[in-house]
Image 1: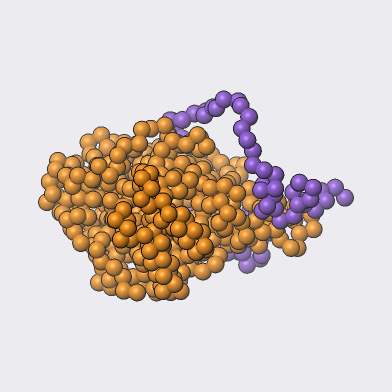
Image 2: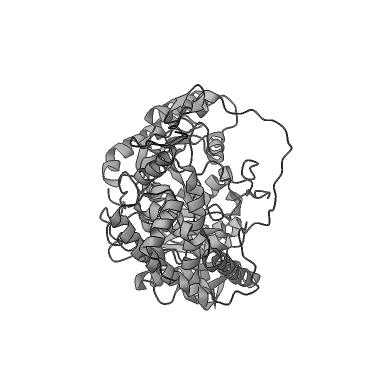
Length: 95
Length: 472
């Protein structure tokens, strides 16, 4: 499989990144090199092998459904680039 | 200290003084919290002699990697995107260090979001190797390893996703322990690859590593991947006795691709352990050659998902040129992330995208199973696996930065340990002709840190590599 410039543009859009032409070209080249190396994995027959998502035998971790104290609003908003009336402020979503 | 011959303030002063002397050339720190450290020292000094039991790490100056959140103390992940981020809570490990009463001196440099093996990917400045400032300290916990090697702090916390504690420890001639996945809480560690990340200590001696691990290990309800296991006494495991210990030496770890001086040092270390009564045999990790490819697909995929949270809305730096909500996301991320972070987000997004998921992500998860089985098979007959931490000593700054794949291959002996989820330690085992340190890696069974630490300690006590210090 070869990664084209068009693929890189599509993936950048999915990843919410805006790349310069130089970045697009460099990433196309580098991703091809890395994925070509990753094709090594196709030497292995993995039919019927369970995928490992996680080494620990933990499944769902539950706790009692009981309210716990939250962080104070002013602390939560302390790092906000913009805030207003106790909310995160962003540019208008609707025209 | 109990005799009042030495105060916590003395220790903190010494640490701050050392930072003042050497950190202009080493560049290990991103933030030094002089005021906070002095206040904590004064508080602890006032409590000396009050009859209360003191913490395990009472008064010991420590540094924290800058991807571990510290309440009220700037935490940047060495990224421009988080340049101004001041956390509102502590990571569980930081709360545990506070309970053990170490004194946090500051936050340590790293590769941005822990992606890299040289510290050259810090958005602020590269850290330099204390043994030769033309060389990298390794990474991604390069600031942590360099700060300990340069004597700026007594210990540091790092994080290890594919070797990021052990490799810089090897490059800087200090001890670095990556615990078993799940032994140490990841709550408050800014996530890179959640199925692989683990926090651990970087120290001058194995005994120090045992003390710090004792302080930070244990189940945490705030981390759903934290293991419910009993925490053993790590310090009392350091008996010096390795008689009859069974060591497997994978031929893949000492074959092609290892620098000859590294290989010699590692084989000499094996002889030292043999002299102490350990027995060894050559073994094989047949799928080792697939570990780097497996790792980069899995880690990048997990990273592309984890780093989606950095969108310029709730925290971090928002692009000044954003006119729409989509612009806030796209421009903040594009201006805030560095080259390597973007590359891995791109790679991971590609590997997870429709049509490629089975070919890359699922395939890599299946090969991960095969690699884990290789380790399980060896551990049926052996207590430990021994090899180099990294194929070479520290390389020169700038030498590999344009070649991501070569840089990735530096992790060929450390990555499989993360994939298998088992513990690994790097201890100093020699120096090359240029005077750069070499690291020995010892890998143990899941949750068998006591054996890993015992063997590393026995080796360390039989040699004097850990006593040498860089000329600064």
